[in-house]
Length: 186
Image (cartoon, rainbow, N blue to C red; front, top):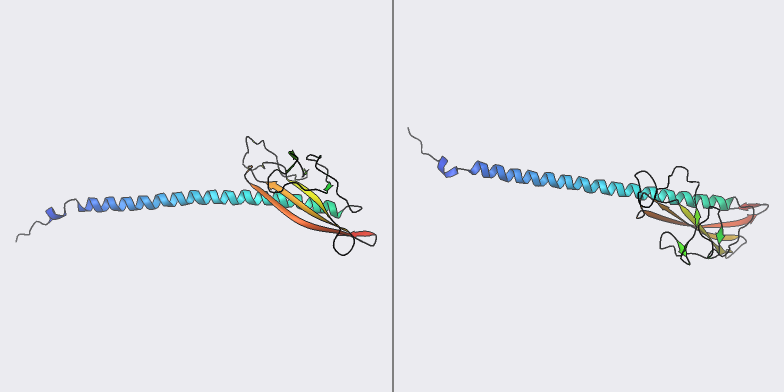
């Protein structure tokens, strides 16, 4: 019995099919690697954002602690001539909080939160991994007396950085300090 030769009609079909499968597998592998790199960048950005928020919240909580332990109700002073200070103060005027670092009359303003012990400040030219771009700061603004009752209302703004200048977090709170007997009810 003789069989007809049908192999001449299928010459090279296995090679073409194999090449197509190789291209499909290569495209899938490249998209997986690209997606993995994007996920790594997103995770790094989220980590830096959380570090900046943590630094800002620490500065804000310290400012609230400082107000809480005041022996009398602090009143605001004009801080337009005062630059960045390590000593907490209450101001009667506010800088532009929409830009970082905060400035007033082209001078940087705020209180440098140097009690942020676990952080090391890095130079602006060489932010290393695991460090912060700058020391967290806070700014306390005296908003005046509350509508009803005695005391004083304060606005506390705090700013913190992650590892770079682009990673900035600003938090804000309002704090009421009023007398209650011989102590201050905060």
